[in-house]
Length: 386
Image (tube, rainbow, N blue to C red):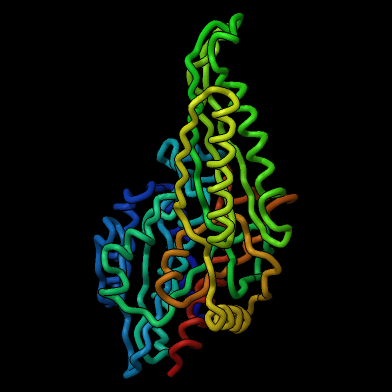
């Protein structure tokens, strides 16, 4: 398989770098989707466009097998200004493929080319190119638009490049691999007034400060030590002058966890603390809590297939010791269909010269293309072998 994949690489590297230079945000991946659809048609695949707006599905069937396997890649970029001097740097100001979805798209197109040529399978492959992974729930949108009704799958697989793992390695695990992502937006309201007369108005700044401090005790004091969760306040804003107490202060942040009962506990605790702080301070506090991505949970059998495929593809593959607290909307697909999500090493990461995901100077490692293609192909061969 090594030689078969190597033949594909020059064109795929050029394609990947072209996608990197022309990034598109969630649900606006029109150019990318057009390139994907055109490439799939050139292979003779049955192609379906416009799913959830910009999603694309290519269908490849061979033999008499009835089993159907889904392979998914995400296509969108991030609203980040790219930094660096590479020739293929983003040409779209403030938009950057800072998570490597350009690489994921190129990998899945490469897998389609390889599988269409080798046909070492007996059944049907669904190549799913998904929009809007970065916080907009494109996987959920595709499902709501009939993805698995129109294109039923017995199992579904996806990968993500992982800078914290060295090139040539891979990891996954049965059960949780990525966290659920929740967002909270809190508004603390006083009446506002002169900073020299704080006794005349409830102090929204002080109440917000107390609320933030109390919220940071939730994980350590409201959850059992055996549970894992992260609560982070990421923004506090209010006021415009040094001598005016503002009438309102806004607090925003995120919660990451792996269990719905933990989510319930944390949300209830935030609301309890907000209500108590409001009573004690004389303010009014409104809490909006949104659970926008569930935890990404691999099914046991498919996690085993993912690891076996990685080893068959020549990767140094092992079981991840712990899940990550980052989130992934492939979780919505795994709620519908058994499947698995793999971390594909691309070298670099913390403590090295290679930037991590979502960094302004991040770039996908083109040397990981061949390994991702080989993994997808081996997944298909293991799932629907001839």
